[in-house]
Amino acid sequence: MSDAFDYLRVSLLPSIGPARGRALLSRFRTFRQMLSATEAELRQVDGISTHLSVRIARTLREEKRSGEAERIVEHSRAMCQKHGIRFIPFTDASYPEILRTIYDPPLFLFMKGDFIAQDDRSVAVVGTRSPSDYGRQVTEHFCRCFAEAGVTVVSGLAMGIDTVAHRSTLQAGGRTLAVLGSGLLNIYPGVNRGLAASIAEQGCVISELPLEAKPDATNFPRRNRIISGLSRCLVVTESDARGGAMITANIALDQNRDLFAVPGSIFNPRSAGPHQLLRASMAQPATSPQEILDEVAGLSVGNVSPPAPPLQLSLTEQGLYDLLSDEPRHIDDIAAACGHSLPSLLVDLLQMELNGIVRQLPGKYFIRGSRRFAGSAVSNQHQVRT
Image 1 (tube, rainbow, N blue to C red):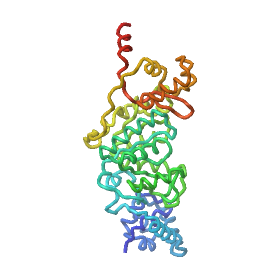
Image 2 (spheres, rainbow, N blue to C red; image 1 turned 120 degrees about the vertical axis):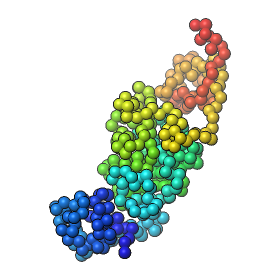
Image 3 (cartoon, one colour; image 1 turned 60 degrees about the vertical axis):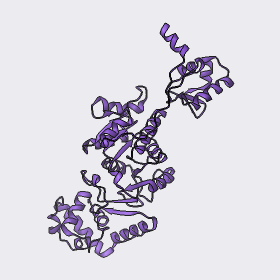
């Protein structure tokens, strides 16, 4: 009688990945039957060479004697039951169909949470582990819109853009899927354990790795194919030219996924990756969430709150705004440039921050905010006269 954990058992054999694992179980039906396979029978399986058949046959003989693989499987089964983790083999009806169709789909998934029908309309959002404030703003805005349009957000639980994507989606009441480069009982990074628990309640945390697997560097490129594979399209918000997000972008293209890149400042090295994708016509520019929703399923942003109406700035506010940019500027520099006293300047900047015109960063640094404004009548008249 077959057991779902046969897919884990076969993965423990030497040099067996998803494709060979499926071929072996298709030929022998169960791992128990495979234990008695001869080298000649193993060689009849697609992808099993003479040399590999010898190694597998030797491992199977050792397994009958030692039962080492069986102990690993039973430990995994017990840990799944203890921690409420589901084991989903490739043949299970709940295995995501969109992932089943990619090249080299995982043999199985460990999963905390559930897939639902909505997850068939997913957008992957990835980027650098050290985003700029602009990158955070874009990610927050896009993910909030995706959540409010009923689109699931997929990312990798890494620090930076991944974390912002997951948190923003949860805060907007949406669903998000986190694909790990470690086991589900070894959440990485550790500071995101709480976030992973929240995702499991409002989405799903996923790994193809053994439950206690460490976050080895070789795991993450493999993990990235699942992030892309679970999604209809992928958005790169910020990344350097050789970042992990760029690996995911290339995988997405190989999987025939629509690829989007967020344009950024030419002075920001974190925008080098998206700009490279755009220059090579590998990605479409992502300048609004609606462009991406159109590609997912012709969806509309729907009930996303409309932008706040433009504000009318005073001459003082206009002058302060003109001194700022997307690059942080310390309050002492602002005071020196505008000639205002620090107490007066702080009051003005606080009011502008409350209106969304500026944003304060740690250390009394300020940048421009995202709120639109019309400018004062006096200022506009001055522009006309000049």
